[in-house]
Image 1 (spheres, rainbow, N blue to C red):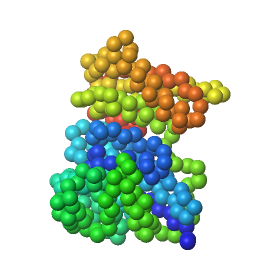
Image 2 (image 1 turned 45 degrees about the horizontal axis):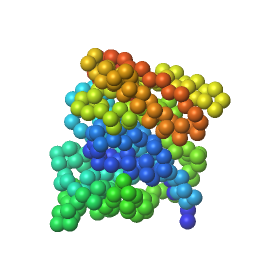
Image 3 (image 1 turned 90 degrees about the horizontal axis):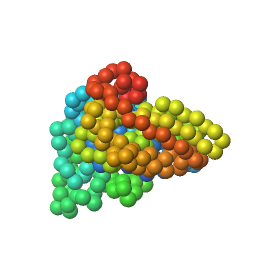
Length: 295
């Protein structure tokens, strides 16, 4: 069998399972995952390499109606990701019927005429049997494709079958990336994301969306990596929440993020976290650029 290579843009609403799917396929945590909408803030590539194929999946922020500059930048990154790719993989929550946002995603997808569209009807374990036919028909009609697979990304169910559909549309090409490369993201960016993931998982209301993380320093000393990072919050009132009583909360965040970092880096990590208030940072173009959220 000839070797295949291609780029696949993964698009959809927030919280439909795009990042979970890519992490499962690549076997690495290239995108952080939480139940909070808009967890993914910028385009992330996850690369899977097998003997007869290599696929570069481009994870995108969930397309939504933006209300600030950060969200507008996120949506623009998602829109830009479908240019020059080989397949568009649309991920939807199969338990829900298409809504207005998915109608706008369908219009965007259809602007790339000639690019194959594959549907991933995810979360099929939440789909009632009596709704299967109607939901499948509505989504395939909306996105103009008959190629779909119903999946449960959290369990890996039918994911291999989904890959087979994608491979049927990829051209015969040599691999583009080194065999051991699984993402185009730097270790510093992933470190910041791992910290942010723990915050997303443990905070509620506005705090998850009002938080960003930047790595200030990175030093490697033999088998030890020293990382200092700053957690940025939007309001002064959020700082004590992030610190916790006697610093207990930020310590817990650091401990859990360090475990992921040590697994990624393969050595011991000393992680130092600080909290800084930067009011209105989600509307500040300079800060968004420094955080690499502006594309």
